[in-house]
Length: 151
Image 1 (cartoon, one colour):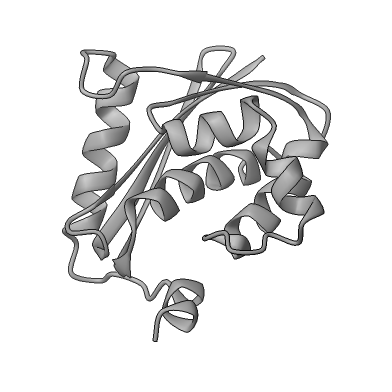
Image 2 (image 1 turned 90 degrees about the vertical axis):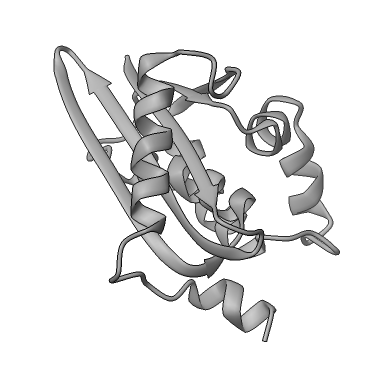
């Protein structure tokens, strides 16, 4: 089983944002993070999950994702995303990211566990640190899909 911890942050919503990811597998650990000039917290939460799944090189793994985002966890675990997809994501936000997420989700056996943010879980705290620090970097990227939807 691959375990992934994720977190997203935005300073202002929208504002500068970032994500942090910790992947754990058989004693190995990998950290990923990136910051963006203008984005939202929910986009960064979802992008953290996507980035974690994209880092898995082979298909078919059991993956457990820990996230403090009710938006992401509930959308998947309560099946909302499949209804949104059937309706063409009408009136939904972050369509680009959900469309990127779905094929990654289908490549593996993914389960989500929600955990309370800022509650002392060391890996969640590390992801939060990575997300916040990424949002504070001087070399932030443009979140092009967000900018195109919100000119």
